Image 1 (cartoon, rainbow, N blue to C red):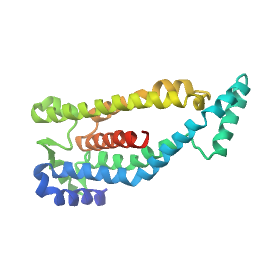
Image 2: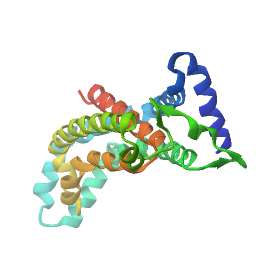
Image 3: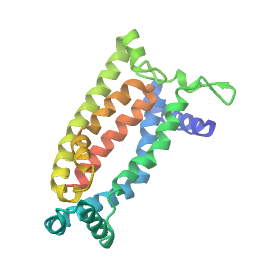
Image 4: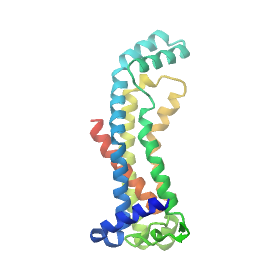
Length: 229
């Protein structure tokens, strides 16, 4: 973790002339964008896979008519169709899974009072006077600028969540035949609301990790608008 801490500190030093006291926060935003840029090829592949699954709708509809009374046979036929056309229903999960280590590192980095037997100096950094190691509960106690910072983050995340909600509803409606497998009904109902859980994440993690979540969510919204247009 000390190597990762040095990386954040070096990025903050580079950005210091532009962002001054918020340089570390800017470094986290830049780091998040670099991570998202690295996984962007997988996001493009995921978008192509989604379009391919949508294109298979007529064939899946035919399989439903043919095997509608035999759920097991229908599921097997749909999986065989996906395999034949090299379409993976789980491909869309890869970008999120590969980002998880970066988020976990940030979370632990700004939750630790010491790094390598030395005081964690990153905890002294701020975003507009809001300490990067503090949480929403701390902002509620102190109020002032820290509270305004969190209000801004919640506003951004809520806007992105509503956008993702609408996009997910459209995507799931387009691919409904492909989701005709056991348990798919529950997934279809819950999936559009997943983005709103980001609000909970922002509220409970350190501000530095919340910045990662908000930046990543914004990137996802823009990426989705471009790739799924």
